[in-house]
Length: 470
Image (cartoon, rainbow, N blue to C red; front, top):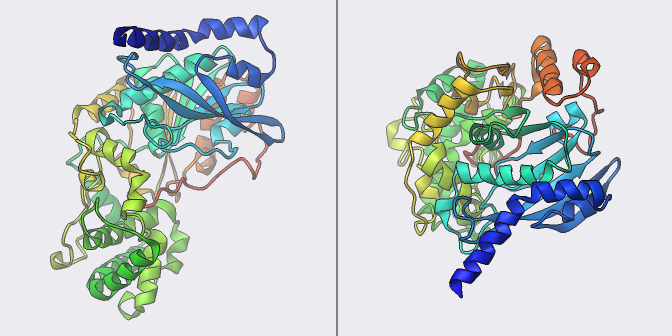
């Protein structure tokens, strides 16, 4: 009986993998409404349709194998959204690398090409998590294979050109997808994507923090961070009250003291990740004379005292697991803080994942991707922000790259985008995205977004993930 059930499950997933041919036939002789066509795809089910002027917007579940190498070993429901404009338009495949938003939105490449957008929730972020969760099946190849199956299922409906995109961990995800399935996409636009090739060599971050912004701004931030450690006693008492009032606990990280230091040590990094040089005026100018309230509020606003509680960490367990098994995580030094004030330093991802989940680091994973990008990148665009810490270790192109680019937006943070590039690079990047999307040569020559800016759809701020996360 067990063999029969396993055979049936494998057959179901196999049929879903071969859905390209079935969906193509449906496109010719089946339903014509886009919702019906989407739901005709084996394994696709509707959660909700939401109206938005000029579009159809669907929140969907798609049945995926837990293990793409062994599809007979169970499935899970992966959440996706489709912002549908027209099947004749290009399609942008977006992932943040975390949860997927169920509110209609349009990423920058989608506005540029005036196209459809498919957004995918990363595996193991709830609710797209198998139950029970076999964490060994959370890796960059399995996640890329999720994208590949979604692409194969939707390509017969959206037959035009496709471009993969994402910001931060989503930019990493788009890059890994291209590495493992280089024939799927016609182009990749990866925003602010870190590239931690050698996990235990992080001197690039130290050099970044020694020169970012202005000396006046760096001195202000460094002083507040140091003062928060000098005043550890009274501020931790406030932290205890804060945790008690909100029901926060610290079992995963180990203690309130460890969580407090982790939040404080994120302060300078967090400022440059999400703020601009002009925001330095919001940082207390004289930390030594600032009140406890001012120090607390500044650290809480930038780092967030809930970040390393059990409740704050739980949503991001998949990220920390990946950081501790494949992605790597930065470690920086604090030369302006006396050693006696720092008890733990930057804590490794292992400290932020429940001990019941086994972890083992794979140093070859990022080296493999980095080597592939240097030698094989084709139709890939990487955009970084000048003042974004995560850009200190970035993707670089080698002699084998073709029609690929790495650009830096001056003065910008983790929200860097094509619109923020200098004019020549902005025009070139826009033209290449349009070319990869297969639009008309006249549109490519104009090198301007084909869709007007829509304040309700077109987010322009950095995708904010509290604490030290890309």
